[in-house]
Image (cartoon, rainbow, N blue to C red; front, side):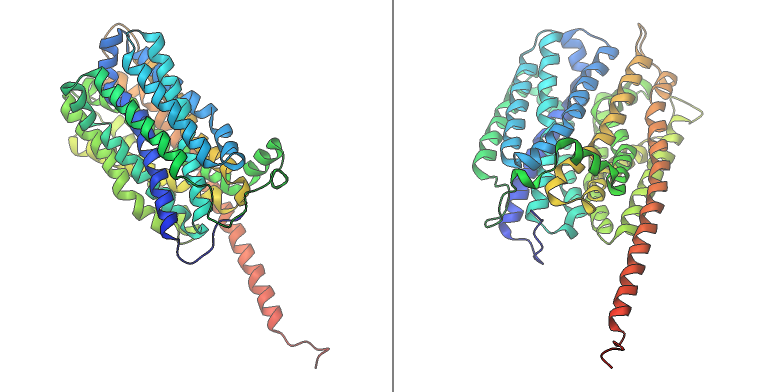
Length: 437
């Protein structure tokens, strides 16, 4: 099955995407809620920073481990059923987490949230591949990311206000009920493909091992993996867990100010998403340069923050720029999905998207857990310990940048060779046939 190639997508296609994007909105809200509620969770459930890091790392580990199954399910079962299953798992997990009075059920709840969350984004992007032309891939991925950023906005200041106003249990049980309504909407409203487009048969799919091997062999998939690691990894570390504690305990912010800076991170994502998506859809060179510039900015600004001579006196303008660029970089991480899609047959699109998505979350798991270990201990962490704890995030992003630079050159050389061959073939076809003369 190939993606639709009409010049303008239908109104129904936009409705399908909008409904799917609302599911991603909810998934990101649930994923990021612990970034705001983490310190309250420590007080409610009586654990320390190291256990808090393990909470988030476990959730992300389950998310990461489910990526390949989620991608294969998108291709072979279809987005509608897979999205519904993911939403049901999130609703159940949030209910358990909201009612938990001790650590074990709270961990079980976050694990279920991670399981359900893993099924959402890949299947929303799979819907765009079926309902929209390929030339809109970067833009739609970025727009989907913007909707997710709005979900994160709901997970910052408004979530903090809800926790203060109606309490822990009512906030999380209420969000679980809303997610259950979205589960019903997925079953009723989502359709895997446009009318008249046949569903792929079992014969259309290669064996799972061969599908994954072929996906990784494509340079676009590998490039997407490293680009996602470079920019989505820092975003997850900062926004999902360590951004607020870094500001509160390392830079002496109050909770309200820290939540505002997380809001700036989400705003950076939302503002940059459409712009980066539109730029990246202009061709392979535009994609490469867009992602490299954003990656370089993330690395440079956070290197300046972590290396600032006065560790607990980093200028607020620099902190604001760093948090904003992490959000904008995450929008670039969404564009990375289009790199994998560009060279992948439609029937294997979910597998390629899953591999790309593993990049950022594998880096996030490593950086989150290392930060928790480095911050653990009996004393409250200071600016110097946060500087050391967040260094792995910066190292991973820098390493991924080097890999992206190499793959960008490789893919551009391949594109140049393909263009030269196409031009030569076109010129040969215009030459008169001596035999005919």
